[in-house]
Amino acid sequence: MRCGLALTAIAALASSAFGRVYFEETFSDADSIDSFVATGAREDVGAIKISPGKWYGDEKNSAGLQIAEDARFYAYTSKLKRPFNTKGKDFVVQFTVKYEQDIDCGGAYLKLLPPTLDPAKFDGDSEYEVMFGPDICGSTNRRVHAIINYNNTNNQIEKVIQPRGDQLSHQYTFWIKSDKTFEIRIDNKVQEEGKIEDMWKVLPDKQIPDPDATKPDDWVDGPAMIEDPEDEKPEDWVDGPATIPDPDAQKPEDWDDDMDGDWEAPVIANPDYKGEWKPRQIANPEYKGEWSAPLIDNPDYEEDEDLAVFNIGYVGIDIWTVKSGTIFDNILITDDIDYASEFGNKTWADYMEAEISAKKEVDNAEAKRIEEERKAKDAEKQAAKKAAEKDSGASDDDELDVDAEVDADAEVDAEVEAEVEADADSDADNDADSTSEAETETDADADADTAGTTVVEAEDNEEDVKAAEAAENKAAKKAAAKEAAKKAKEAAEAAAEAAREAAEAEKAAAEEEEEERGHDEL
Image (cartoon, rainbow, N blue to C red):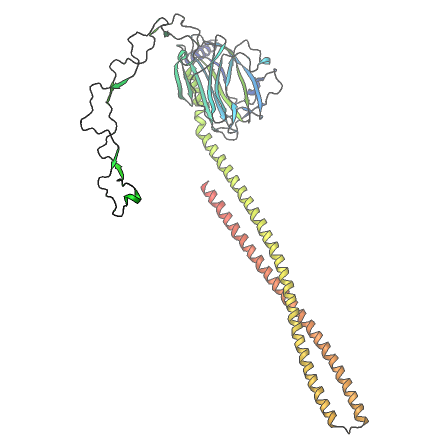
């Protein structure tokens, strides 16, 4: 019994030393997301899930509530451990946000809602006490919302605080103190601080211009500078003319006044000219500045002890986002800034170095993937280009083969025709000799005539044999020419294939060298 009392006393002292925690969620447990309940006010609420994202410092510790669907509204609430009335206490709301999707338009703020909220009816019109966190849409519409409710009116801080829009986790802290001052921090660095009533125009001004005051008749509100009445123009001051005739100019000798008119010297700048003289300017001794009514205490001003006093029962997420991926994590509501700082260090700051390194690895892998895709596309283009060139070359080769065959046939024909002509000339000579001998031998008998007829028939047979041999010779030469052309084509194709393989081998070697260089850099 005494041991139990001692533990209770120690816990009480610890709670007193660190203040009180009203809400704390790190989403390290898989079922922690169940405490965030979707509204029943609309049916198109986007889904949420537990995820550390694609890069993180520690998989379990970095797990958070992630927005899981594109172009959706999100309306979820989670109940505090106990209601928190901030009167007479400090109030701290702190959480981390990671815009993993490289945000283009989407909010990542929290709404702190009254205990009277009905979670099933929660929507954008529901009353809230505080709204705090980053909101980004485009390159110009960016700010950290810090809205407080006063007298049922939502009031935005006048100063625009820029959020962090990169893809790393950032911690946002809003600390409202019991003395009505505040601090807004991002990543433990103060972005804005001061008095609540100075940065949120929720109270009347302490002082106002005296409505009964009037400007005195002798009040001189201008001009601030006048001409010096005692200043005089120097006697040697030349204020004109600005130009004079050139005294060194001479009329040309061939100038004819009757023909050319009266001669006039050209004009030059007056070296003594100083411009228009004006008195120097001096301060107006009677000038008193722009008149304004003196300030008096505002009779309507009254300090309000309930300024920046909130009654909180729920944490709400009520946002619209175009691209999913935003991660909320390490949500804390407490009355102790020291505990909030320690909590932030344990859950966020201690893991940021590892998260940054993980992000760099992901970026490098993505850059490598993009480069490999680019190389693959380039290779496809080069292959298509080479294939087109090869098809064009093959067509040219076919045309060359036909031309070669025609040339070979023509060459063979010419050669055969030459041989036939040579044989014909030889036969003609023989015929002439036979005719001469026949004319001188008029005394030949009938047997000689018969013998001559036999010789003529033999000669005709010999011509047929020669013609056949010539045709056969021509065909053989054509076949030999075609075979030579075929071998030449095959040799050309083999050379082209060898060149292609050499080019592919060179490309493969270059890619392997590039890949090895990439591994060395990693």
